[in-house]
Length: 151
Image 1 (cartoon, rainbow, N blue to C red):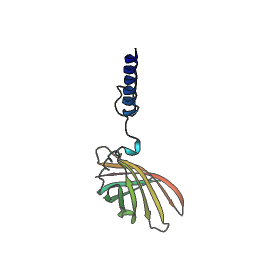
Image 2: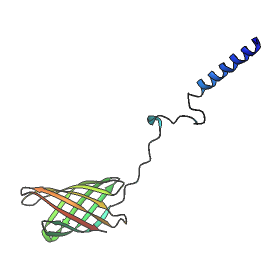
Image 3: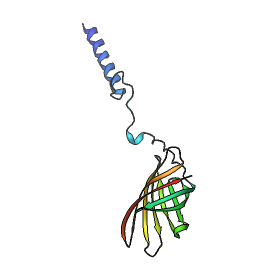
Image 4: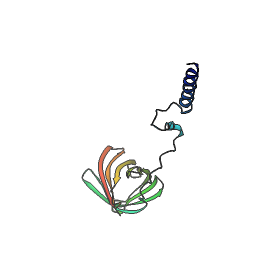
């Protein structure tokens, strides 16, 4: 009986060492996943390219301002110029484009009543249309409208 006790103790000790060395993972579950801080970051999705010239309009309070957008783009950062020659209006500013095609921009304009127009919109999945809403604020208060531009 004494020999059997020794074998059982040896088996128990081996089992304990195996569990301790396994990192306390559940049998059949494999190694534990690394903690979040040790995981590699998710790859960044590319931002859609919207650089170049666009033609279209801004529509505010029932008035349509036909014009062009000229966009310079570095990654998600946009430098934008809107020209509406028929109205003698130019607006410039900065904005951003995210990986889902969402556009956000603030364009300052200098008229008798200078102000800022905030554009919030979306690039169409075909890449040929930018459209959305705008909210402008100047000495007359706030006005809302929409915009649409095509390549």
